[in-house]
Length: 245
View 1: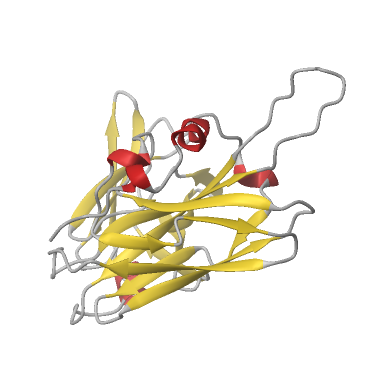
View 2 (view 1 turned 180 degrees about the horizontal axis):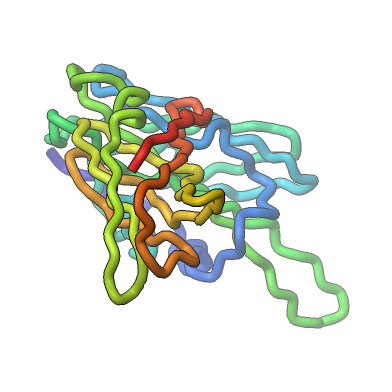
């Protein structure tokens, strides 16, 4: 199965600007949803982009495999993103389609990719001859490729995590094991002990794996305590859970 070569599709000039992008907190392009679920049996999935700004924007869309600093032209993934480049006028939208090219991916667990949107504003008019810096805004959300027939549900995966504490010279860590076939992403996690709360630095945990998250401002391991966490479901909502350690 051949993969798409984006080199002929994208402009190199615009790609170079991707490495000097600003935070997406001021981006005008809004993605409908906080994550994408690509079910294996689906022909494709659609993502809606809306321009909430006051100017037309050139928008590029592509997928990466977690290597966000790699030039997208060099990524060869088993998906086709169409259209890869589009112009979106103010208060208008654009539907992006992601289509599987049929390559083999793991059938016993989810695979994680990232959907990228790079918005480039129109060239600024400058009548004074001054140099003007224009910023390109990049937004990036997760896309989970979900094989058919996985055991359990994503919601069950989020509630069946196994937690414990570990201490080393660098601090105290919350150890978590995910025995499911699904990714679990967190929006928040806290260690509770002796009427005190300690924030936990978390990230997504892959299927069938374990992770170690540092507990902030905790220098020794107290006995007992609880872990309170919020996992994110398919719709961007929260799954709240509190477990004894």
